Length: 251
Picture 1 (tube, rainbow, N blue to C red):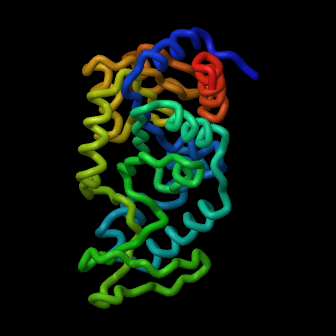
Picture 2: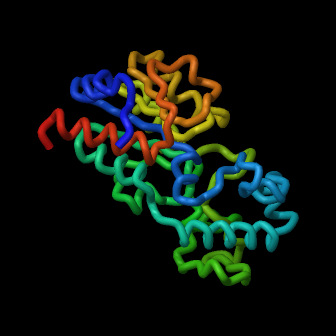
C-alpha cells in the first residue's frame, strides 16, 4: 500500500477532533466509472449544459432532457462504490460527529454505507413533479423513454437534481455550512472547487479554525489555501488514512 507524507499529522488531528466534515465531488465517483462533467469525453462533452440541466431546457425539449437523464441513470446503475466510498463510510462510524457533504447525484455514498449525507445538488435517483412539486414514487426504468406524468396534477416529472439557475436545497446547504463552521478537521475530496457555494465550504471551515485537507490528484483553485494537500485519488488515499486511524485508536 502506498504511503501518505505527514500522515501522522492527519491521524493526530482526527484523534483530537470532536467534529469532522467532508466535501466530495465528481472525482470520487469518477473512480467508479462515472465521468466528470469536465472530462473531454465526459457527460457534457457532446451537449450544451443549458439544454440538458435547466428549467428552460426542460420546457423547450422535455424528451431530450429526459432521455439524457435516463442515459445517466443507466450509467449510475451499472456502477458500484469504490474503495474511497467505503473508506469514507467507515470513517463516519469511527468519528462521533461526522458530516458528509456531496456534490454528487449518484447516491454511491449511501450505497457504500454513509448515513449523515447532505446532497447539495440533489440526486438522480429521485424524481418529482416540475409543476406542483409532488414526489414521484414510481420506479423509473432507465430503458423506458416514455415521459411520466404526475399522479396528483398530471404535470411533468423531472429528476430531483439541482439545475443551473436553481437554488440549492435550503436544509442541506444550511447543515453543510454549519458542519463546516464547527469542524475541527475538514476534508475536501475529489472536487475541482469551481462550483459555488460548495467551493466556499473548505474556506469557511478554515476561517472557522478547522484543519483542512485536500485530497485530489490535480491542483485546484483552493489548493494554496489548504493546510495539507494529498495528490492522490480518494480510492487510494482514504483507505490508507482510515486504516492508519484504526490502528492508532485500536479498532
